[in-house]
Length: 165
Image (tube, rainbow, N blue to C red; front, side):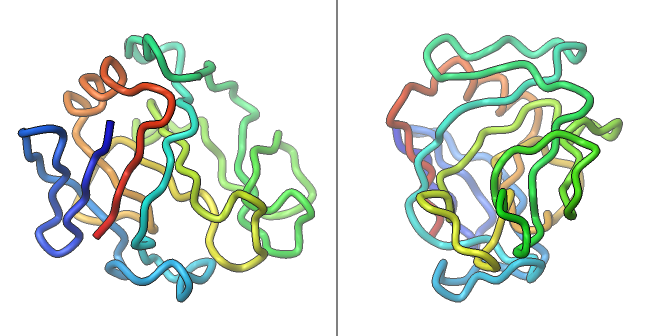
C-alpha cells in the first residue's frame, strides 16, 4: 500500500480518499538537504517500518504491520553526537532524545518511517514519524487526525510506503 502526501496542499491520499495532514513548520525539502532541527519534512519515498502505540489510549494495534506498545521510558535519539542517533533509546539517556510517552496525545500512535535509518547519518534528521495531529505543523513529521490513524492501522501491511511530494 502506498500513501501519498502532497506537501503543498497538506493532504494525504489513501487509495481514493484524501484527508488533511500537517507537515513540518519548515515546509518540505529534499531529503539530501534535511538537517536536524530544521523543522522540515523530507521529500521522498519512505517505508513504513512499524507502529508504536500507547496501551492506555484505546487504539487497535495493526493487524499486519509489526508493532509494540510504548513504554514510559521510550525515547528517540535526536543528538547527532549520539552513537544511537535516529534510533530508539530508553530514558534516562546520556544524549538528547525525544520522549515518546507524551500526555498531549500526539504520540498515542506512531508509524516509524524509514527516513535516514539504513544506516543513520548524523545530522540528516531523526524521528521522522507519521503520528497524530494537533495543529497545523509538526517538527518535521507528517501528522493526521486520530480517525485517519485508526483506519491506517487496519490497512497497512509490511512493504507499505509513505511518499512525500
